Image (cartoon, rainbow, N blue to C red; front, top):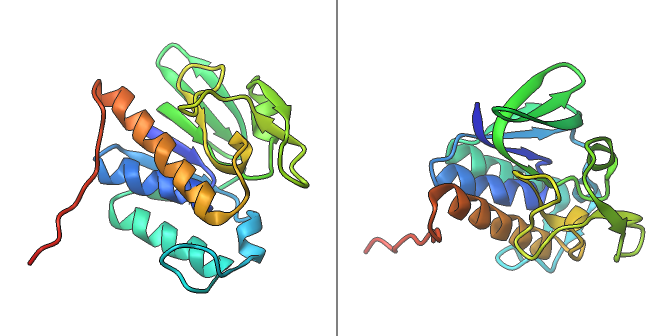
Length: 187
């Protein structure tokens, strides 16, 4: 069983994975390599004066993997609540977790198939988003959402920040106290 499964490896999902894995939580990221960031050119992401979307996504995945996040390719079809936690079903396999973070960008299919509450989108071309609280919680216990699918702006810097925020909230809930991740410069 994983502590956290993240659906989507774009800026929101990879950012969440960086934090959960670095906090020592057993983290799995499931991605189908169809995110819109793969088609982006980015010149407004802090710390990256200019970068291609594919390079930004790969950098995020490498950073999360460095801290222990595992990655699998697949398309998630449904999230189910069970007695022992959550099951995340792909077209070929099932994975178990205590918490799931949905970071699927523009795609709401898995949310709708899983009974997660949705509402109309707020961004251009984003038709449906998940109905989440300020922490990123959905209507299903243990299922969270981050990034564009959670209603934040499609800009990579904003979705990455939202992924980090939701991950901090998940880690804090798991730990039973507010989690802070600060490294100190080695001199």
